[in-house]
Every structure is written in C-alpha cells, then in structure tokens.
Image (cartoon, rainbow, N blue to C red; front, side, top):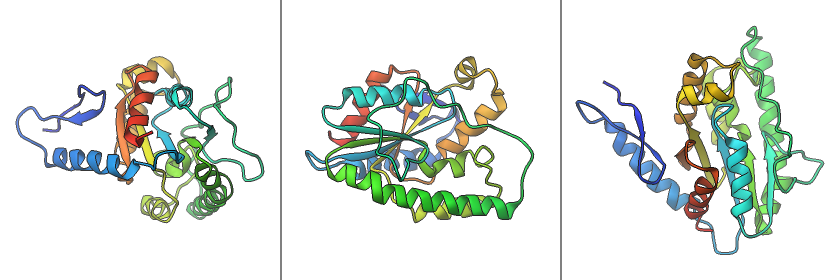
Length: 237
C-alpha cells in the first residue's frame, strides 16, 4: 500500500511504507541529492529560485522570508515577470489573488495557443529580466513560474494534453532550485475555504510529481524563516 508523506528532521518530506518498501523512495533520495548539487551556485553569484505549491500553502510567506534572510540584492515576480518593467525587490504587501479554479473546459487549440504564448513570454522575460539580474548577483525568487501549466492547467485555461505542457517545460530555462511546499489538505483548506479537500489533494499530488529534477520539497508547517535558511543552504549562499 502507498505510504503517507512524513517530515524528516530537516523539515523535508519523504515517503514511508507500512508493510513494504517503495522503490520510489530511493529515487526520491537520489533526486534530493541531485537537486542539492545542481542548485549550488558560485560564491557571490546570484540564483533563480521558484516556489511552488497549492494556493494557501504559504508560498508568499516563504518568498518574503527568503528575501529577508538573503544578504544581497533580491528580486521577486509572480507567475511571469513583465518584459517591460524591472523586477520588484520583494512581494507586494497585498497578495496577488489566487488563480481561478474550475470552470467550463475550453477548446484544446486555444489552450495550446495560450501555452505557446506563455512559454514565449517566459523565454523573453528570462532573457531580458531574470538572467541579467542573476548575472549581477541578484537572488531572483519567482512564484510558480511556468510550472502552473503542468500542475494547475485549468486555472491557466490550458486544455491541451499534459505531455505538451511537460515538453514545453523541457525546453524552458531552468531555475537553480524549485522549492515545493507541501502541507496537509486540512491545513491548506483552513486558509483557503473556497478550495475543496479533493482539489487540494489533487494539486498536492501534481506539484509533488513536477518533472523537474532540481526540486526539493519542504514541509510548509515549518516556520518560513527556517525554510528560507534551508533554501539558502541548498543554494550554497
């Protein structure tokens, strides 16, 4: 039977089995170690970090804590940064409204066009805003980035095949680290009453399966400051 996630002593999530071992446990441990190596940045260099997870899990709080803990220049964006405006140094005081969930499914062709448009915007934004900032030594923190097309396709009105969204991710510029925040569905629903436990569980599963090897999962029940320090440790900053 499938085990339930549990927190280890570092606040990271791991899978356990009650009756027999799950071979995915070994894969998860290898992926976590690989993420640590891939995320390491040169001393004095900047980094690009993306925080993901369901609405209400605490992404903005962790982003604020990460920016506050970092000694050096910082930048923040939600979903996709503007091509025309400079990146803001921190999240705004008023949080961005959550993406609208559900609704009537639309046309697949239109959804694919939206995906292509979003991918093109992401490429341009990375080339014009994110990469130059990282090269200047800035820590750039993004909320969701382009990963929403895989984990939250309905909210982004993408109705195409999931493999197409995954394929788009594979050709996108990759962050130095993806921080996946996970919590119990009950905790998230206490913060976002408009979400059902079923929808939350579905999103938690989708984010946990994100096809990005540089992903490290943290328990959102931990204090944001503690998570922020562990993220900086992963980056070697």
